[in-house]
Amino acid sequence: MAKSANPLVSLDGSMFKRSGAWFGLFQKGSHYGDISLYLGTCHGLAARAPDKNRLIDVFPTFEGRKVPFTVEARPAELTLATSRGNVRFTFADKTKLMAEGDPGMGLLFEKTMAQHETVHPRKDGAWEAVFRLSSSFIFKGLEGSSFDFNGGRDYWDWERLSSGRVLGRTYPNREGRFVLVMEEFPYGGIVRNAYPSYSEARASMQAEWDSFYSAMPELAQPFEESRAECEYVTWSYLTSPYGTARYPMIQMFAGIMASQWQMCQNAVALQEHLGLAADLLLGPIDRASGEGQLPDGYDDAGCETQIIKPPIHGWAVKQIMKNHDLAKECPREKLEALYKGMGAWGDWFMNYRDEDGDGLPTLDHGDETGLDDSTLFKDRLQVTSPDLSAYLVLLFEAAGDLAGLLGKPEEADVWHKKSSDLLRLMIDRLWDGEIFAGLVPGTGQRLRSGSIVHYMPAILGARLPKEIIDKMADDLSDEKRFNSPWGLASEDMSSDWFRPSPASIGRGCIVPPAMIYICTGLWETHRRDTARLFAENYLNALKKGGFPFLINPKNGAGSGYFGGSWPRCAYAILGRMLAS
Image (cartoon, rainbow, N blue to C red):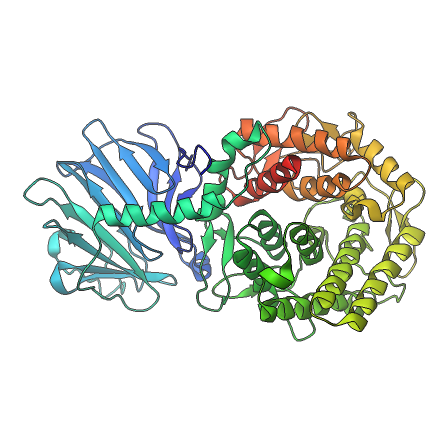
């Protein structure tokens, strides 16, 4: 196994969670005496609850009183370190979080329960906490220790239909120690006849992490040294099938589910676990409309369907096929579902987003580029954006490749022709000799801006003519415009509209998807050295900056969510690319 398989990981703004679980421990802050910790959920309906994903606050105690603490986390164990002793947490499986403490140490849980939320005793000394719109939890002391809420009083406020302010405490056994299990249930809680020991739980979590990590490839140096911490986030952010979600999913940020195109990016990052990667691609397809449209985002509770995200299933499949023989490694039924869903998704754009009939589909909102406030959409809501056609060229090509693997040569020819025809049309209509322009649908008026969206067709790699590749690569290499020491700006830095604020995705900040698509595309061309420079600059910035979601190209300052899977996904994809 590669070294550093058990790294220290930062949880500030993130969460400690086992892969597949739908809840975890969320941390805010990182300084001694100024850290908050709470039991939180990843379930979609919880976003409508009064405290959103926050279920109940957690505090370490010594002889019953709260004590300040620091957090030390590794993939299989979180430790709350105090001057009096430590409390440790681990997961026995996807539904059971366990804790144990040194002599004298304990845990305190606090919350003002919302309307219809209650705590009440269950058999064998267990207590159940019901968190509305999320789940219920059974709390039970083990190995001679115990637990209760409100000193054992079953308090009920009939006027508020709530248990009101609740305090949950652990009580030590004869040795002065406690062991606690917290089990999540989608329906009513059940008290088990037996539970694993803390050491058994920790060994189980460690073994699962080790198995995951050992299958992942080493990255190019010096990026290998941060790989384990990076991949822990990816691993822990995975959620198992649940509710209306029949396939695994991944969180984008702690408590926030990834969107459709991020599922595809993470499938590429996780391709060594091919079954998981295929499921991440199939998850959005499972939530498609009858016409083939995929949702923007979805979770265990519902779908967001009124805006879309870019169709990059084709790019993902082509990337995975570089390293895998899908016909041998993926079950035929999954390939069939992927092929059918991808094809319907591509055809949806041609059938329902090309209303002027020019053969080039249109986006209805800047959000649909994935770079929400892209300046290409500054003056127009609907734009025939060049990135969309580029993504569909790859989607149609990949659909043809899958048809070939499935023994459907005639269908493969149809898809490959769709791909080549669209490629030719986008070059003829959108390339103006300087840039891939946007178009006003209906009039054909050309639109130019400072947005990096004009350069996203670099994802097509060597499918583009050499002179176009060179012009795009040269523009992107201009240090006054896009090329910073930390990656590529999402808006021309000389533009009047350049504004890389923490609240902006498309106005200048360096963002994961642009780096992934442009670098993997140029890597397949004679401009590989250019792709290497861009990728190395970006990976160094992620590694040194704590993996920020957004990076200011003027000074390298990170902003946005630091705890997310998106920059780690980019790190894995580009680090693997540089090692190839």
